[in-house]
Image (tube, rainbow, N blue to C red; front, side, top):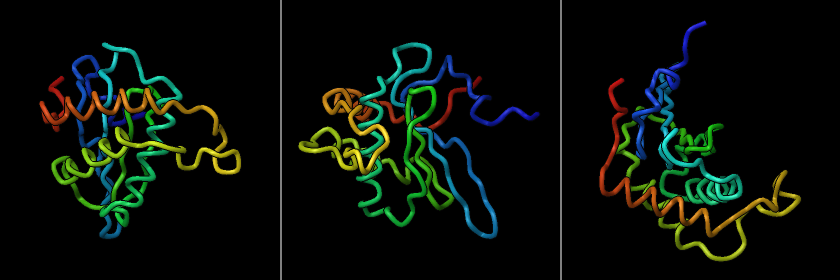
Length: 156
């Protein structure tokens, strides 16, 4: 079997950032998958599950109500718990969505109240949420992204 693209990235050199993971095109439609890397793989602890779940709920809610809502295909966590996939219609670069991602982070940082979709009839694991830790991780990510603007995967 062929090695999938995400397994060819050297995760020992990967830092917080916003990267193009892949682009898929079919019948004049391109979908871009972004790697929103919130923690540094194999160098710091992964995002705890309740915070990851809260970021997923808030991030998806924000993006699907934002100015790019018609382009959003998916927003959700990576299995390794070091970040999120942001999948959008379009042949895009990280700089095309940088402001949207920073705005989403600010939304999460400032969010107060009930987590959207966190009721038993709305979510299969509604009670596993942690807003304070979600804010911690996302603030650290945003500040690092704004400072270093990492948009290209490191060389292997």
